[in-house]
Image (cartoon, rainbow, N blue to C red):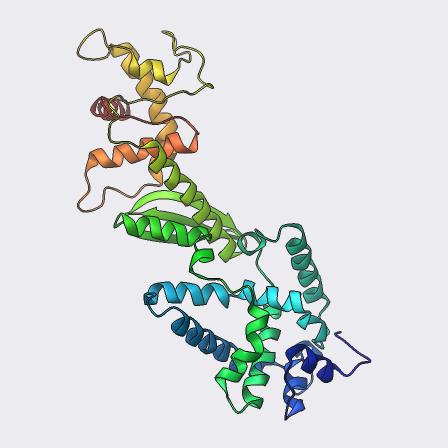
Length: 353
């Protein structure tokens, strides 16, 4: 139900270090719609949302005069996201002042606070913050903004301390989406997201230049997208690390899990051995060729379904390479190499037909 038995307005004025000319504004900013009265914080929350955005826009614009607009947008979004505002509300106890009759909200807020206490660095990525926490920060900000005669600098002076530590261009790079975007931009690659609903789940696929790179799913849309980004970034970094221009043989290196050999009945052998040993003729023996091809096509079939056909300007060879790279990355195999890539393609086609 919020704080009772005390002068809430006076206590909040001390916390804000701001004395209201019209104290009714602050009282209105602390009334949740669940109370059911004629007044709630919603109008002030609407104003506060826009005012905080503008105040922070002014801050990053003046603080980083050489930062390009794309980076300024990312910086602003990271600092005034729902998750960041929710942390402000929790850290400074704003939710405790909110008059409410919403037990379900209290449960969600308690779960969020518990998650922050257990894993403070990961909760932004893996758990959606209750919107009511951000709303109460914005409604109080709206009350200050209106009471100060719409003085943006006054609003920033009052609220800046609550946003500390402010995310800067250096700390922003720790976010997986930022890192994935930067890696793609350096190579001139296009980053895309596809989203669909599967039952009560949100499913995201991440595509780089039209090629599948990662996926994630969750009931919460934002969390599903973030999981997909983290999966894609891990795969992208693995491919970067494992790919090198001087590779000459198609295969995988140093995989301790592959210990046996393929016999004539299709038993296992190290993939290293299949592709690295010297062929006895210009073409691989037909029996072994079919067995290796059958094994490989079954393993990559699922991966290939997720891939979009070769994009304009690409080559079929690049598409086959990407299939092999993603498969090896996901299965934690070693580095793929490509001398006999044309043979692998031929094997797949023969088995498929």
